[in-house]
Image 1 (cartoon, rainbow, N blue to C red):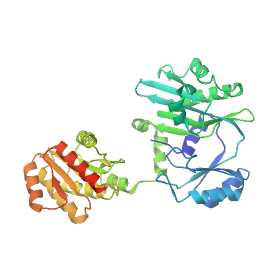
Image 2 (image 1 turned 180 degrees about the vertical axis):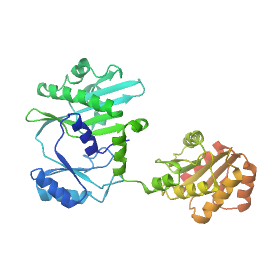
Image 3 (image 1 turned 180 degrees about the horizontal axis):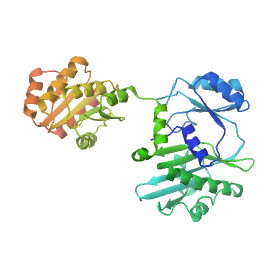
Image 4 (image 1 turned 45 degrees about the vertical axis):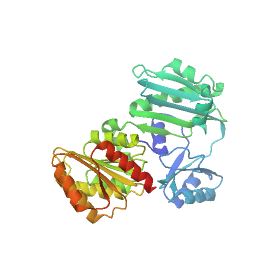
Length: 380
């Protein structure tokens, strides 16, 4: 679960990490009032769960109250990197002397935590990591021992002398945030040295482990403030396990293992899945109809692969569910159907007799994936 910047900063502040004074605004008048409270101008930042805001125009430095209002008016109600902008953060202007970058993240490859810091922070950290990796200092942290003094000495060794004490204190507090919030990532980009010698977290990115949310009730409650994708809400209301992905082949299967395998086989066939949708082990005709409605409402879907292995689920009921759904929803893309298991033969007979030109039968999972991939490419 990714927090918004302002939520991450609230978490930082509770752990004693210095952050700029800031006010969240959901309307232009609120942004104008925030600017007045902060002394006139301010920095206006779109609040979306995406990086690269500075380079893409999502951060505007405004010198007056009206400039803050204009910037907020330009941002609010639009989309930024495909995400709706429903709020902005207005922050005080600070005199920045130098920018750095730091983060601590869970490193699954080494089964510990990795802390990074560079004196050349700010924008283009990915480019720096690729072209001059030696400019980024890295230390691995044993989860049982935690962040130690020798770690911070190593990390802050290239910073200006006047920034080292402040950065060291922030690193220890970031470790506390990571530990206490069950986070897998805490990142500050940029971490800044001000002209008065203070070190401040100018940004905050926090990712919390979804598997630990049961013991992070306050953080889980923040989900209520997140915009809800209407397709995901439709699936959730129907009790379906649905995750939006960025491919073009819509996937429907019964059982998480089978759906995961289907995603892999589609990838093997040269295409990308548009979603993960599990109708569950006891899929019914009704749930199949709802699943098709959800998948077909996604405009990025160019073909659909229905991969059902009947156990409790009967193939004839699935076939009736598919035909019933097609009476409710106009399918503009082909549906590749692979049925196996209980009553699969009867299900295939029902689909064959229906002779719907949108239904493409397939005998095996690999054949179905290849057909779905080819049809998706042909439909682009």
